[in-house]
Amino acid sequence: MTTSDPSTSATRPRPGGRSARVRYAVHRAVTELLAEDAAETLTIPVIAARAGVHATTVYRRWGSVPELLGDIASSRFSGEVVVPDTGSLRGEVVRGGAQDATDLADPDVLKLMRAAVGTGPLGCEACVADRHAQLTAILDRERARGGDPPELERTADLLLGPLYYRAVFIDRPAGPDWARDLVAGLLG
Amino acid sequence: MTTSDPSTSATRPRPGGRSARVRYAVHRAVTELLAEDAAETLTIPVIAARAGVHATTVYRRWGSVPELLGDIASSRFSGEVVVPDTGSLRGEVVRGGAQDATDLADPDVLKLMRAAVGTGPLGCEACVADRHAQLTAILDRERARGGDPPELERTADLLLGPLYYRAVFIDRPAGPDWARDLVAGLLG
Image (cartoon, rainbow over all chains, first blue to last red; front, top):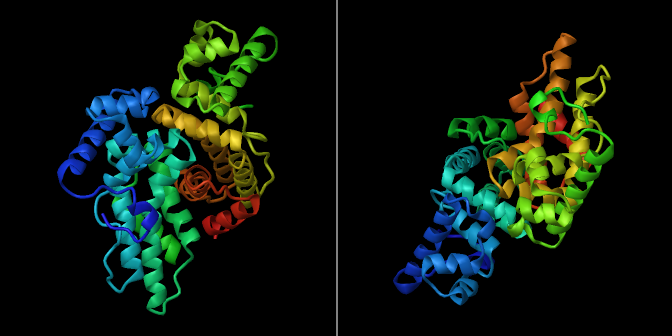
């Protein structure tokens, strides 16, 4: 997964070797604990014990449970954070929205997101940071092409707002087609 | 607080006396525990002990932590669930949206909501049930007047979606004026 935000990439795993094994073990431990509805006991010592790693390793790498949950939730996102340049604002926003819709329809992603939200503002922000970075890149590119795209804030409100609301709050995730209608409403 | 949904009103408190005192004590206990960032230990025995009531009383009245958190979150909502009939669809939707925006800007409400979301789908749904009931009443009334309002689903997506997204996920709750712009986008 690539991102242009250095503050986010600092918490990303380095590929291969021990580091990748630790990451895999920790991600699996969290997913298992959530599947057991053990959300109320989701602390770093509990996660580390389940993963068979030292708690200090988890603290050093992720800092806190909210950041860890957010990292796992976004690592489950399909597709690229940076949508390829197709020359079409509409096409790229639809593609991003359809990816979001697909990911939010995954029950494991939803479980992770709700647990992250439950940890407070940091966990909430971690659930959407990659999506904001994705939209920012798309809109910047359109501006560089000389286009006049909507502001990031408005785009996030009207695209990510309904997508997250449906999936998280009313448990009826939208389909990718539905994202197309949202984009039509946004871009006219 | 009134609602037309009997399944919701069954969990509502009866006014006055011991029942009201229990409700007050339990609500206060949860609010205190959340303020202490003790979300991971938010179980019914812990809440009951803090409130000085029997755990069975809490189980009998609220059933589970998600339902309790949702009840408290919605009891913090300002204003009426049923927006008064003004004869104007736009005016009523704006009024409902402005109430939502105001409530979601309250840090205590947000804390309760995030904790409720963290408990799973039941807690998530409890955060929005009153808001759905409010929109349903407004749209039904417009239909009874012979109007042709948007569908509930679309209204919730485009009004509640952005409001909850901003408040819960990016920690930048919208102002009541901003709700007016959203409604303009929805009703044309």
